[in-house]
Length: 99
Length: 100
Image (cartoon, rainbow over all chains, first blue to last red; front, side):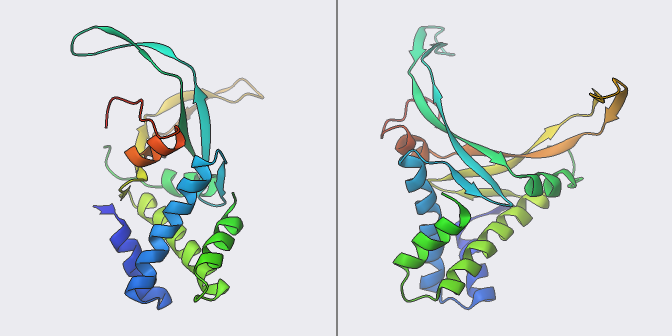
């Protein structure tokens, strides 16, 4: 099972009494504001959950795995997520079956 | 941007909602996401990315102070894979990653 925007909105409707439209807008805006901050080059720190950081990757040699042809992988900026202590501890306690 | 700054920007644009409600909504969303991962579920947000758990097998570690060897149990760690739109937008609109 996986959590989606629709279910997150549903919870805001159930638990906080936002109406359906407000709940949907809230979820959209939450993720959009995070994207905007990252797009502007800023780190996003959500205490208790984790940090979204930006890393500059240099150009490096790559290869088309199908043809074996060498193609350089361009320099680029990527997003990385570092889970916070609290989230790590909660997830570590999960003793589910190996994925 | 911190959590409280995120709450501020959303509250500013959602003028019809009380600041307190925006604060509760943001906390509720983060708690729901943490809870999903803590129970082994994935999170899939189109255009943003997906969160899942990666398994780390048991290993022999070392106490850095005493040098003593300790066995560490296998565990799960949260993992985030950015979605296509997010990848493109942080990279100046260009998706240089070949896989989707």
